[in-house]
Length: 261
Length: 362
Image 1 (cartoon, each protein chain N blue to C red):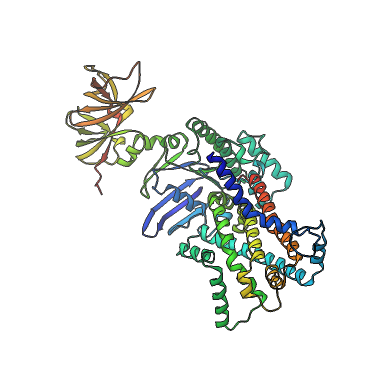
Image 2: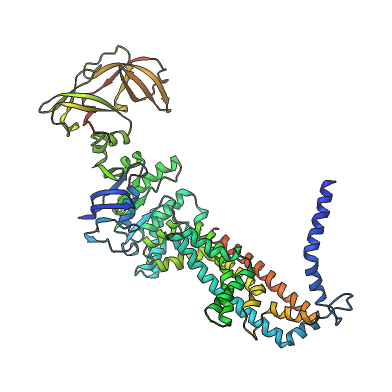
């Protein structure tokens, strides 16, 4: 009896969480010109409209470029920072770690405003580069957390063995450390990409005039009306932000089993 | 020619001195063991030879060339660790071939050398496996193959047997010595296990608290310990406060209450030159338990009572009381170990005794 209640309750919770998403995906295939029920037939016309909407496609490209650049920069910086923090005796290591992780702890609005005020103080105008910098700041902690955890499990004596066999420190990193670190690097990069792609709060504050990312574009479209295009766009974004990490996780698992976990 | 020379090496970590003024000469082709309890500085010394640590003072030379400023990857050393340290993402063959990639070795040559090395460690058919598919003993053999395939100037072994099971450890000990002898590579072996040190080494360096206590061949270190620490660390020894009453040409006379007069050969007491208080050293396995009242004409004997027995299967360790002294004796067991409370006669020979000067307690 008790278990049945719990089961029903659990199902309700999941429905509450995922039904809206399912509705968006469902309605994106609705032939009706209003983005709401009842459905009048199946159609992919909203995806075509989406494809032909220059503003959205531009925003989409911006988001992809921004996400990829954020992922690359965050991953490179995150790996370097993790190496420094884990492998070297750095004074006040704990404080540096806390500072690097802090952007997760600070509410994003606060961080966004703070960076904006700081830029004003320095008399630097908004630009794509600054938007990118902002994204790097709050995706970096995720990369560092993931990479550090993995790096701790890579034993130092394995690297020392490579050094003793004649590999230089750089060769040792590329041939021994990095391959073992790869699952974490991939996971960190994916995190960075999806977080950047998804972000709206910071982006609204930091984006220069004329540049829109997908979330800010949707946001501005919603001010006018709920177009069915938005449902189609939502579906595309769901596929990207849910599908990509799942593929990434599967890849990471396969890499991990190959390299011995 | 010396393969490795340490001259007045000092290593400090902050205020703590891990190695004090150490000088050492390791001759070409020899098997030298750094032996001591954990924290004695033996691994620190090895890591300085390897180039993983920089000495705070002093000079390290390999094959007569100063290497203080030569980084580890240019020293041409073979390094084997306690936990194997194989590359988990590479196959066995790739692991062994790794060092050859950084030396001018052709592809065919490399293949042949890898096969030879795997042959030498008696695992010729495992080249395609990954390290995690191998047992601990196999992994350590592969680690050894990987270290020797590059024909290192010196092979450095950091407690390579400590992670293995007891039985396997003994097999690997014999195996390791065989491989070392067959290729004749100069080897520095670090261990805390006196049995390994005695069985494998040409020369043992006993260390304690960052200082060298004694350097000598296994028998020398075992029979003529240079200090109380060495006497106690290698095997079970009885150390008794005694008095030297006279030094003659061949032997020294030692008296202690409850014991007969003992004449210790001079070479077993090289540091005693004048009468005075000394420490008498008798190895536990040199004290033989006989039924009470047994008279032996060519040895010394003393009456004792068994206070405790530590049964070890083939042998037993007896804790005995002789007057005010407590002694240990390790004897083979005939049928059953002697019960607690037995009255026995302890027999020993004067030539099995050694004498040390009394050390000032710090």
